[in-house]
Amino acid sequence: MNDRYLIGIDNGLTGGVCFLSPKGEILSTITMPVWLPDGEKHREIDFGKLQKLLWSHAIPKNLIEIYIEKPVGAKSANAMRSMAASFATIFCAAETSVGCKDLIHRVAAKTWQKQLLPKGVDTKVAAVEKAKQLWPDEDFLASDRCRKPHLGMVDAALIAEYGRTFT
Image: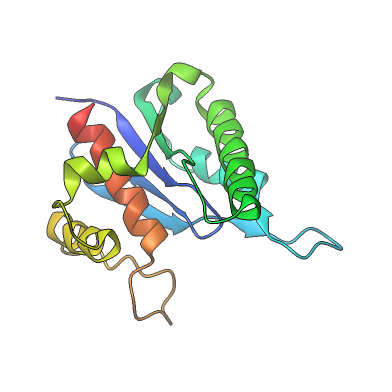
């Protein structure tokens, strides 16, 4: 049995972060921390808040593995630039948190989806259904005002589960 705690990270400004115990229990989920730099029009991932979040659980660094969804394509050059910049920020926060690149894994969306979701379905709907099946007591709501599960938090949990189950 894997004795590592897993952190799944859904890359992007609307992504999420999920901590899983070695047994697959959700310890916490959160939306990706973002900020709007002074004078800018576009949000960025907040490196400092993400780093603090990754340090927030009292888990020895050598018992953590981090799985980050890597950018593989986008509808526009600007979207791809944003995803690449987000990935770089996330990877740097992850590396400074665990102190070792060997504990950080890049995973393509199609890779984890192929293992966890049925073939030929709407991946957004299927991801929510799979997450509810695995963690029936988890609502994946970003706040008390939300009515629908936050897809970034759902994906982050499934990315962590992929790491726990298939690697």
